[in-house]
Amino acid sequence: MTRYLRGIAIIWVAFRFGLDELVLNSFQRPWLSRIARVLAVGRNLTAPRGQRLRMALEHLGPIFVKFGQVLSTRRDLLPPDVADELARLQDRVPPFDPEIAIATIERAFRKPVDTIFASFERVPVASASIAQVHFATLVDRNGHTRDVAVKVLRPGMLPVIEKDISLMRMTAGWLERIWVEGRRLKPRDVVAEFDKYLHDELDLVREAANAAQLRRNMSGLNLVLIPEMFWDYCHPEVIVMERMYAVPISQVDRLREAGVDIPQLARDGVTIFFTQVFRDGFFHADMHPGNIQVSVAPGTFGRYVSLDFGIIGTLTEYDKEYLAQNFTAFFRRDYKRVAQLHIESGWVPADTRVEELEAAVRTVCEPYFDRPLKEISLGLLLMRLFQTSRRFQVEIQPQLVLLQKTLLNIEGLGRQLDPELDLWATAKPFLEKWMLEQIGPQKMLNELRDEAPRYAKMLPELPRLLHEYLSHRPADHRRELLELLAEQRRSNRRLQRVLYAFMGFGLGLMAMHLAVRAGLW
Ligand SMILES: Nc1ncnc2c1ncn2[C@@H]1O[C@H](COP(=O)(O)OP(=O)(O)OP(=O)(O)O)[C@@H](O)[C@H]1O
Image (tube, rainbow, N blue to C red; front, side, top):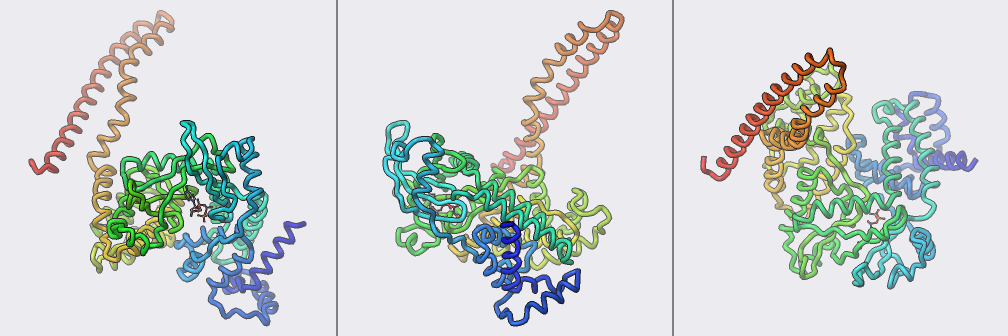
């Protein structure tokens, strides 16, 4: 019953803010639009459509606000005015009672809170729809007192989420049936993606594990600090991590006053991101300014501090190859190749005409070459490519959309810090190295290196395995099988020779490459 009441409330809010108008013109059932028009008499809908959608989501509560925030990143689906308005959504929610936070901590670790922490600040430092953060101190395993941040999940979120998501699913199914655009925009898929995203956010250990991986990946770079996780105190509902002392990136004046080199900071931001994406295929994908800070402490002065690891993007080898090949083709202005790549990979229907796709890609890319290379926005370029691809029924993988969104964030942040930032100069070495690794001789060598241990293990074992097999065969097959064994040995030797030749060739290539680099050749 409550589900139906909530459903009615959602329809009412949507109607009050005139959201029916967003889809009214493309309703497949004309009688529905007629009823809506009759009921709509007296509504004041002077605000722009994006603003009305934002206000409706705010009315519907934190889960819908989060939905709007996630949706705002889907610029491949939404018109720009709506996406911009949704990006303004902030999940400002009142903090929950510290007693509840303490009860959650005690339930998670089965200990009174004062035996876990030497001190615990009851007033939270931040509070959002999913979790809130308290500062505390604890004595670690080595007896040192450590300042920590304790992130506690908002209680009772799961049932609320389940209820709201099931209503969203119902509405999406309904929209898909009655709305002409429903087929193309696939609202049910969008809701399914959001469902997964929210459930991931509900497990804080997942976030802690992401942080630990990122900390390991970034340790050699010396450009970014990531809090250490206290694994003895990590539970799906509570995580305890090192407290970071830093200045939010939005407070540029404070950073400048402290003597931070802002243009360098802009370049470092791009370097960090490109390293995460192109070297590790594991990148922080929730780069809003609240999660990025800068240390002004003596030992770590000017380094970034990264927080909140709920959303991490990962790229497969296949994704990287797709990007490498497309970027290479793009910079050669080989639009035909871009079109062919999409058809070869089966991303667009096989009957797509190459020339048509090529023309569409050219229309997207050509205007970029009108500006200096340093002004090219890879994020925008990818976005336009994805938008074009959609017209040709290409399913863009969510991790690539996440990458494109994060690229836009990083570029925006970099240019905000330093309008003169030459993004291309910072990104170029990464792309070149990575493209060489993806499609050059380095890729062959890397694959050989990865496979070598398997061959090395397999080759010596083969005769023994065959011998074991032979000794269990009846006598009349023995002679035949012994011949087979001899043949197998011969092929092994041949295989070994091929392998050595292959490795020699690879080493030769590598030596040539190094010689060219060192200017010796
Ligand atoms: N390790 C930390 N050290 C210092 N401050 C922290 C730490 N972790 C979190 N905070 C503070 O708490 C705020 C919220 O943290 P976080 O972003 O992880 O929570 P959240 O619930 O995911 O919030 P949102 O969804 O708004 O990003 C941060 O902006 C920062 O001010």
